[in-house]
Length: 93
Image 1 (cartoon, rainbow, N blue to C red):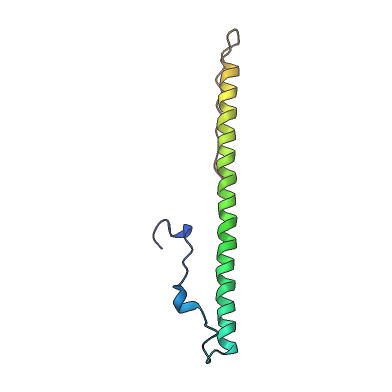
Image 2: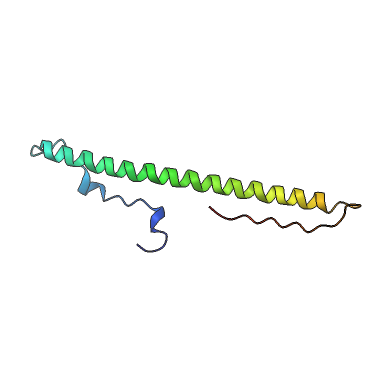
């Protein structure tokens, strides 16, 4: 789909999906169908939760690396130290 689509869970309108128990025509097949839909939605949500946690870990890692680079920069630029060029490159996963 279009960019940004991956970050949304598309759920069908509730009125189309909910099997009303007041409906006397409800069958075992209807209920099983509803349970399968719920299972699919749950799978999507579990996958999305895992993606979000992974992204959060990446963000925390980047913050920590930035902090360490600043600290290192302070250390190497202390007076009386031999000037050396430090190059730290971080590749994204």
